[in-house]
Image (cartoon, rainbow, N blue to C red; front, side, top):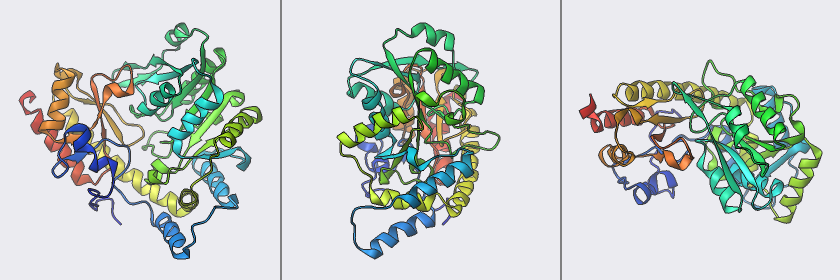
Length: 389
C-alpha cells in the first residue's frame, strides 16, 4: 500500500466525507473533506490481519486474558517514549473523548470548574458542559505564530472552584510539542491550585523531525494528581475501534476511576484490543515511521502553498496532521473567509470558534490525505483568494 493511493470513502458511512454537505454545505461529489481528524489511509497490514484473523475464527465472544494487549502497550511506551507503564495502571475506555468524560465524572462534581488552554480540541468543552461542569478558558498567547502559556494570567483567573485541568499534548489544533520546561509549568500550576491533571497525549506518535514529545508522566512530582491518556486510534487510523487508554499510576486516583468504570458497566471492544495489540509492534512502528515522513511532506507542501497567499498564515506544525490556518491578515470577516473556503474552494474544514477563545480567525485543515489532494486543496485556496495576490 502507498499513502498516495486514493481510497474512495464516500458512501461508506464515513462522517468525514458523507456528512460534509449536510454540515458545511460542501458538495459530496466535488468537495474535499479536510475536517474530522481521521486519515484517508489504511492502517498497517498487521492491524488489518488482526481483524481478518478474528473474522476467520468466526466466533465474536467476550475478550479474555488481556496480558498480551497490556504488554504491547508497555512495549510501545517504553520503546517509543521512554516511559515504563505497569499493566495494573491501564484502563481501556471507548476512545479518549469517553476517557475525558470518565475523568470529568470520576474526579469532579457538578458545578466544578475544569481548566482548558484554548483554543483546544472542541470535544473537551462539549463533555465538560454536558456533565454540568464549568469550562474555564485560559487563552494561549499567540506569539509570532507560536502558542505559549502565560501562567501569571492563569493564576489570576483561578477562583478555587476549579478541580481539574486538561492538557492537550501535543497540542490540537496548534500542533505545538510542549517542552519539558513548559510541562513542568503546567504541573506546578496544577499543584498550586490543587487540580487533577489530565494529559491527553493521543497525538504523541505523530511528531515531526526536530521535535521530541515528553510524556507528562516523566515530569517529577506530579504522579499523585496525574491521569495520562493515550491511544492507538489516531496513530494508526483506527478511530472506529473506539479504543483508548487511561493510565493512572496513583493508587487513590486509580481506585476512584475504577469505581466509576464499574458503576457504569464499561468494558472494552474486543476488536479494538486485537487491533491495538497488533499495532503496538515492530511492524506497526515501521509503518508509523513511514507515515511521519509522508505527513511531513504534506505539511511542507500545504504550508508553502497557504503561506504564499497574502493574509493567510499556517501555524508551524511540530506534531499532528491538523494545520491551523489564521485568516486574520486578510482583513475579512469570519463569514467571508469561511465562505471562500467552503463555497468557492469547496473544502470542508473545522471552524476556529469551536475550539474556544482564541480561535475566531482560524480554520483547521486535515492534511492526512493523499498528496494529490493536498495539492488540490492548495490550488483551490489560491484561486479562492486570488484577488489578494
